[in-house]
Each structure stands twice: as C-alpha cells, then as structure tokens.
Image (cartoon, rainbow, N blue to C red):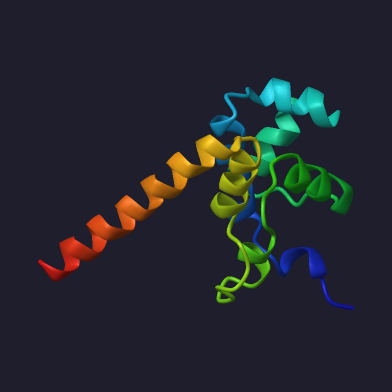
Length: 119
C-alpha cells in the first residue's frame, strides 16, 4: 500500500495560511482559538508544512477564502487565485460609489501599464 501522506508537500499551503492570517492582523493564538486548535499546531502547519486533517484544511481555506486550486492545479489559470478571491471578498463589501472608484483605479493601473510597455 502506498504512503499517501508523503505524496503532497503542504508547505505552500502553510505559507498561504500564514500570509492570510497576517493580512487579517491575527496572531497564531487568535487563529488557533477561532478553529479550536493549539497554536503550536498552527505554527507547524504554517512553518513546517504539517499535514492537516481534511477538516482542519477545510476550516482554514474557508475561513481565509483561499483557493485550493492553486495548490492542486497550479497550471490552471482559469481558476481564481487566493489573492483574487480575497479581493473579491473585499469588493463585495463596497457600495456602488466605492465600486465606481475601484473600477476607475483598476482601469488607470491597466492604462499606465500599457503605456509603460509601449513607451
């Protein structure tokens, strides 16, 4: 029988959890409390690529709105990245006037990048 636990390296997942936690301004202790785990276990996931149970994996990706596609299908550019999902979540909280500003900002960035590559 194959040893399935060693087939996947969870370090990238751990780094994504750590980045998402820090982006929210959460400590390991706060995250551990939110998902009812020991802070040392969170540290092992974040820094050592500790293999979480499926339940812990699910709780962490849903809590931080992290796309698992980037870990399992890294070449599939059609799926939304974690950063894109997190940005979508922030945009969902804005009103229509805020979205107009965000749209103009994104358009301005795109135009500046186009001008930069053409110039």
